Image (tube, rainbow, N blue to C red):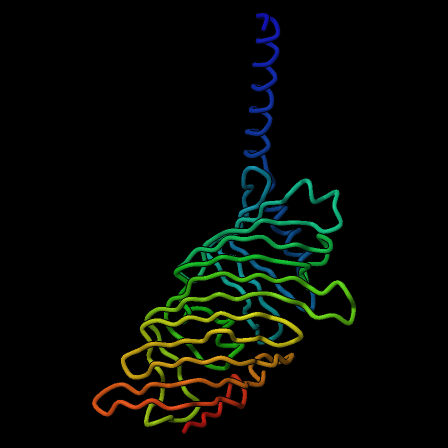
Length: 274
């Protein structure tokens, strides 16, 4: 390569670098934050954040962001940070892809979401999410969905794909691992007001409007529980119908093993055992 060509190349790279630096330093964060909140907010969602900054290579980083709806507010997400990365290739495709990562509820998460358009975020066309070290007690959405507070730490992954047909059903997968927590019971069961667990595992498939529970296992100092079955979903999630069955082991001095079925709803499960 001739000396002239080398100089042209380096000046070009230098120009690109300087342009990027100036765009970053002069980025109108306050204006973009205000416009983003205004454009995002609707009767269904309200987005608020403490601050916004550009995020390389092509994204936005939100600090102390909250996504909620209604009055009083139902909080769907509350995170210390949320990094959104836009895929420029997807701007020329039917569905728009946005990468996301951040920190919330004491843990970390990353994934991506596919949208039919940037002006319509709900429902998403598809999505993938991985998370770890999530403090369940700090997640207001779980308390809203289940009408009870679960404690412990969670890690795992989730996927979602919406139905292409109007009459079709969305599909997805759920894989969650739990450690050191409690699950409160609506009424005492075998003298227990809550189930304490050292570890747990949930493996489920979303299909035809229901969650097929391939594995729901809880192990703790009082009870080991091994369940399978289905949860028929409703618009009000806590009223989703339970149809689970399996085996429960009672630990302690008087050890016992029994078959158990769980019906009722997520908010008010009904236990029957033999």
